[in-house]
Image 1 (cartoon, one colour):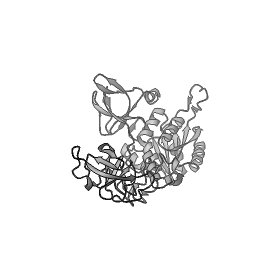
Image 2 (image 1 turned 135 degrees about the vertical axis):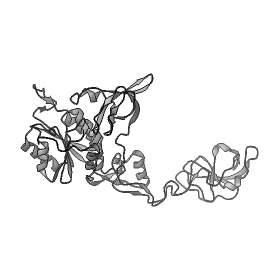
Image 3 (image 1 turned 180 degrees about the horizontal axis):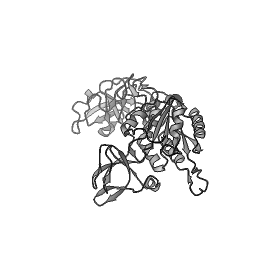
Image 4 (image 1 turned 180 degrees about the vertical axis):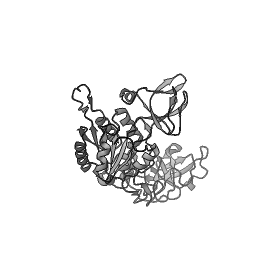
Amino acid sequence: MGEFLILKSGAEARAILGGFDPVGTETIALEHALDRVLAEDLVASEDLPPSPRATMDGYALRARDLQGASESVPCYLKLVGTVAMGSVFPGRVAAGEAVGISTGGVLPEGADAVVMIEYVDRVRGDEIEVHRSVAAGDNVIRSGEDVARGEIVLASGKRLRPQDVGALAAFGRTEVRVFRRPIVAVLSTGNEIVAPELVPDPGQVRDINQYALASQVRRAGGDPLLGGIVADDADLLRARVSTLLDSSDMVMLSGGSSVGVRDVAAQVLSLLGSPGVLFHGINVRPGKPTLCARIGQRPVLGMPGYPVSSMVIFDAFVRPLIWQLGGEAPGRDPWPGRRRARLSRRHASAPGREDWVRVRLETRSDGLWAVPVLGGSASLSTIVRADGLVMVEAGSEGIGEGDEVEVLLYL
């Protein structure tokens, strides 16, 4: 291809990338569920708790028996037993009676409140003196108050946190259906690319992108598949991508997406299957030559060759796609870490173009500053030294020195 197709805006590219479906589901043991995406609703099969329970150590009793109780006018009740943890009290609490109970103990029949142990004194073997009144329901969690039977506790598409795994256990789930982690093949292309363990000859460079992108895939919740290095040869590239499509859910090509004579990715992807290339070029900096194709149901991305551009495009566009392939419900913030800071120097931007500026954070006497890390897309150090990115929206002509910005922190 001799030139870019009409550039897509960042918003248009994101909309196209949003058109891919999750890759499928599997059933796993509960102990492996952390950070997986739920593929079914967890519906409460019972009330939680199933019976009223004490939320404090103290004494279970009838609240009306303590009417008017105070430090100066205590009430006296007969102690008729204790609720043993893991069992229930065998009798019923009658008028003027109390039962010792620990936090989490099942409330005995007849009792409707718990008075905290701090407000009770033992005066004889079977008598207690209570210095505080309570209302019905005090220090008690009712049956179903936490979760009612039939309630949706966790919705499909939820990425499971430790507390969510605990909720599954609370309802007796030892297995859970989750979305598969998408397998993402990463392939480096270019005659100049050599393996990291080799000493490059003049004109050659070590393969950075395959390993950096694979690490980003893993951090995004996918399973990376290293696809190796392929020279700038259309037949070789076509054969390797076809093989990787058979063993993965998505393929990322690093390099070969620009418009030079040797950039054959768009040509190859247009021949591999329909509908083929969806866009070739995004009005964004860095990363303008990014390419996206659909081969059957699988996305294939042609990432820029420079490591900085490639990694920024992943953060700005690809990470949400991997979440989506992995079944995660829309709406998750792709940048959970954000800091407000002031930009240390002016950044000019062309109207209509989305800019992503690498910055490092610097604490000064007058607050937090975002300092642009200067250098082109070929300078790996600019992204190594950066703490995050500042996005300049497409409708902006830039950001002024001292203006407040939102720094999107690297994960």
